[in-house]
Image 1 (cartoon, rainbow, N blue to C red):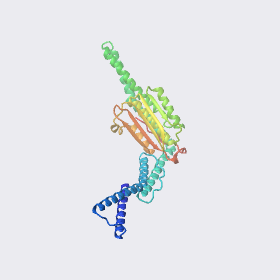
Image 2: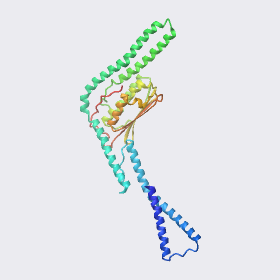
Image 3: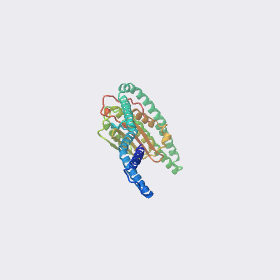
Image 4: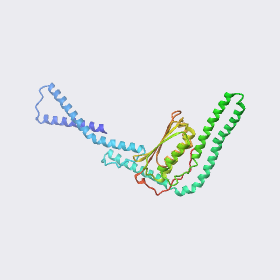
Length: 354
């Protein structure tokens, strides 16, 4: 559209110039040209002047158009990233103006839908109370399966290997040393599994605490129990409703559990901050990593996180590769009308990571 306006301005200037020259010649107001050289020189000079003036006028005329297009592009990028779009200024009644009005309507509907999702998440108090007992039963069954499938098998393997060490110690000392090393590795794995399972024995809700209290307490507890360095960067003045706080707490809990069980990491960074009109949760570790495409559909933890993020109208991005660690970034838009809204209860929370 910008180049079209510039082209139209240049053509308009040329047309006006031709008309003026014709009128001057036809009315005898201009002296006749003495030679073809004069005609060519005058024609080229006039065309050049008209082109320059038309181009300058076209650029001047297109400047407001370019500004309006940039404003629309910035608004669409904000909407694409999951951030609320501020009120767009009036842009006239042309094509750009109509696009601006349509984008404003789309933005308004998007904000309404996100607000509705978040309000629905925070209004599930009664359902949460009814589902809590069922969740406890399901959690006990899941933990029993995990204990049998993971920890019990590891302990059985440790017991068998320890028995073998007693038989081979006098006969083959080097083999016995390898068996003791294997026992140490299996005990470490069993310990990590047990810590991850114990993490899920924590309450499935915040128990009346604010998110700014619950997450630092969780991180301090993990620092005291595991040898992994856990760094927390969290805004202290987060103003979120209960449903969003509960989901964010559970996603942090799930991420720590997955890292303890599978990542073999020595460091984990957790950042929870407001970024404009959205809250950003970023979790990074230096563990073994995994193939995202192969793991995403089979990992109950990632599926659970994605369901929580979708319920809040946010976005989830997982970046990992074998040997490269893992980074999870979550963005949840916060509508202005939802800030500090505390009338709703905590959302129903029955899922866990495995």
